[in-house]
Amino acid sequence: MSTDSKDKMNTTQLMSMIKNSSDFSEVDEILRECVGSTEFCHCLYDTMSRHGMRPKDVISLSGMERSYFYHILSGSKIPLRNIVIRIALCIGADLAETNRLLLLAQQGTLYVKIRRDAAIIFCIENGKSMREANDLLLSLGEAPLYKD
Image 1 (cartoon, rainbow, N blue to C red):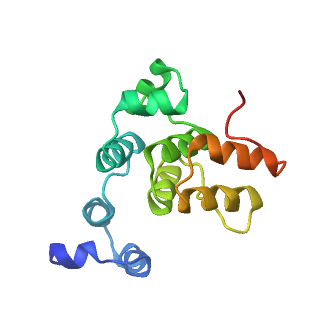
Image 2: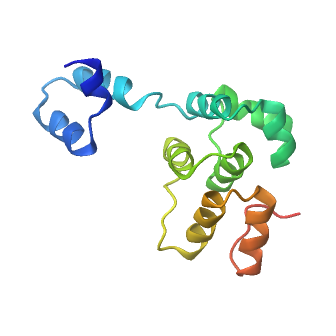
């Protein structure tokens, strides 16, 4: 299979490949090529780089402790859902990037039929800051991303 066709594989095609393969190493190779990094820390680095963000920028904007953020970047800690969302908002990640980070952190993607998630999606789609997103959640009576 050519690299171009691997890059264009959809979920159905990947599922078919899993069902029809007798050796997972073949599937794993395809996944690595068409999905990219499957480690949260690597995906976070890639996303930060695409948005021109450095660790110190994210630390400053997110209000996270420096040591905790570097543990996340090293892969020694996997952040909880609110932390992933805070990081994504600070980076300026789009919805697909945010959901990818959430998936890799094993925190579940944002779901539009959940009011709190819908508010967060609204903020992402409208380029709102982490603070603006938190204020919206508080005004709706939803759990905040962080407490002051």
